[in-house]
Length: 587
Image 1: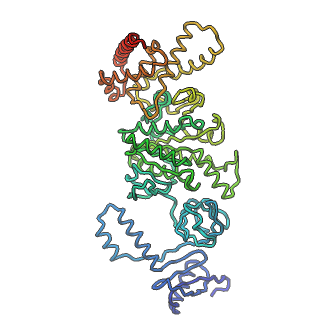
Image 2: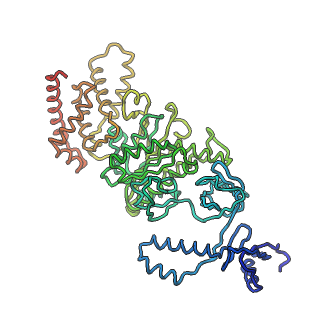
Image 3: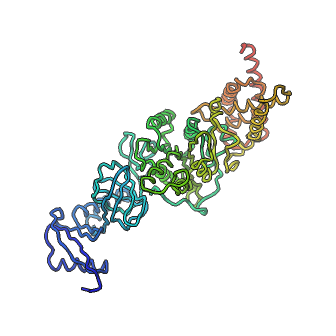
């Protein structure tokens, strides 16, 4: 024994006492591993028949039958998820399998409450690591301190007692993934909650992973059509883009996201809707809408409702993003909706305050910007070398009284590639979707539009901006000249055409035809209140009598001058005939 070394104690649990040879081998193993002198203390434990458990400080070397069977079970699970023939692999494992005396690090629960557990003794635990409590509940390391760690709990904290054991798993938080998740409703841990039984996962992905680097990306140049004329024409969204939907409560933010999901039918896009802190009834209503339209055939809903623990609300968007990355890495196009990140920030603030972190600006912790940037930057259009898949993110943020300069909105505006701002006054005036043309922007712009849409849109946004300015000015004028009156009528007609019924997305060909006709002033002769009716009947007339025009626009994605001329001639004849019929009927 070396006099300069302090003697440490190690505890050996087994059903029978070790002999001198076994005791010497244990001490030799410990002194070689830790470079310290050890005293071995044996304690009888009948549960360790034909095995042993060696504890040093908080580290455990488990050679019990229970642990060896657990290792074997994990090995069988790996085999079952492989693509190779199962029976020969199982036979080989049974014949040649040798278990290991796995080193485990155990800690103890110091305090527990409000979804937070403080754990001592896990000095090697890492941020984001999953811990396993003795009751079977899992938690995630969220706060590293000098002598203890803070852990968020995924489950009922009442099943965790102070003084109970906690075990490191060495795994980061993750969710099961696979094609079988399509059409299902799951919670933030990947567990199905729709009553349709278990889901066969094809793998396991960490909920947090680095965003793709610049070399692994390519430009955003393919449209992700929402089916909403006001957005696709002026604020186009590309596959791989991050476009914020922002506005006050009850202004149609979720409606835009749902219409975008409905518009992906038949376009080989996987949609993921992440519900964060919403009422369970709202998510159930959305599920009913998607089922009725047949959109659940390509949609996954990740639900962390307002009644769920804040820990689940916190990880829900990351879990949805991990699912999206699984499909993106397979070369597919993904649309993911985060509804909404305001409630996500509130959940994170609650966790941070319970972990006793100091609040910063507007009482939010200082890393709340990083909270959303590391989520949204994972949206990308991958390079062809990486499979060419894409993930388009539509985060939703709620404002208070239209204040886009508040802390969370400004954070997310600076992260995303543009925003669609919904204005309460427009919404209550009947303009649906209530898109504010002046404050909304898409930084990808025309790169995400087809040539047909780009040509058809023309100067729409400029003309609408001029109309809004003129409308404000003419409120104070009593006598208007004829030119100003015509411009006002024209602007009112454009605003009326941009009104769209909910859950009624328009195809690209219908949008192109509508824009060509509207921007050519053909609708100025139609009474304002009837413009929507005329436009719907006109589009039906094109579908019924001239289907070749729709097919040409969808096929070539171009708008030749000759095709534009044909559209205007057909539209003009239709409008004149309908106005004549309405006049005869006295309408």
